[in-house]
Length: 317
Image 1 (spheres, rainbow, N blue to C red):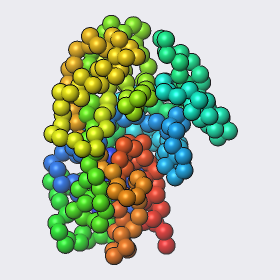
Image 2: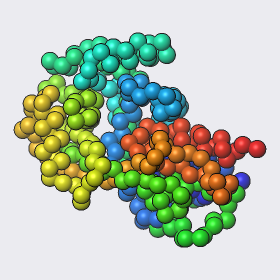
Image 3: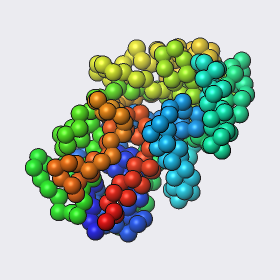
Image 4: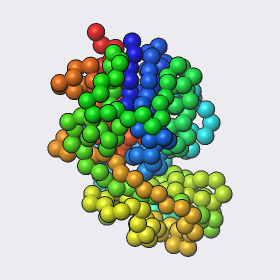
């Protein structure tokens, strides 16, 4: 069986990796000359599943994907896993108390604790990965398994690849290839140096009045901070977002007010319109085509379970 995957962000690369491990012949077509220039480029690599408050389908997908990461990460080499465990600072302690009990029943631990003056919970099962290192590790492993990658290769209008199955995982580019309405949601992050924070922080997830914000420690006193959620974004990145992110984390850890901003980056995530994220299904008019897109802010986290579901759909008799 031959499968052509359209798009090589984190979802397309994960699908290629997973299919090659099952002995499927895979080609990946990426319209850009470099992979990961879409939604993957806006991610911080936060795998927030156990400490997430979501319920229903998305909660089940997150937990299942986190379990698959347990199997994937040891095979992907060094530099992919940045942090094991995330400290969460909630806005509403009652909501989190309910979550602690629900997760305990499911076999997960959320341990109450303090980080400086802030009360919160440590989630040892959640983790942080390096998005680009993960992307290139998946591509490298898929290539070693026989997958062929074609950079700068777009699927032209009306074109049908020579393959038994076609998987569209082109992020916002999916709109041009399948009848799936997607809304671009802007996201911007920053890299800062804050050597005055001693001892260094762990990976931190903060829920505040704006929404949520994440802090990812890096070597040499550096931190990633992000990312914004902008439903009506103008041109990104924006200087206002840098100030906003520093202000939000500075409310909890004042040393960030004096930190040095080293870099900022931004991109757009695909959010389905009128339906829940993500969309993983056969196209109704082309039964041998599958769309796997619209992951919104959960692309990195849901990459393994998306690959697993796509594999099951492809191999189903």
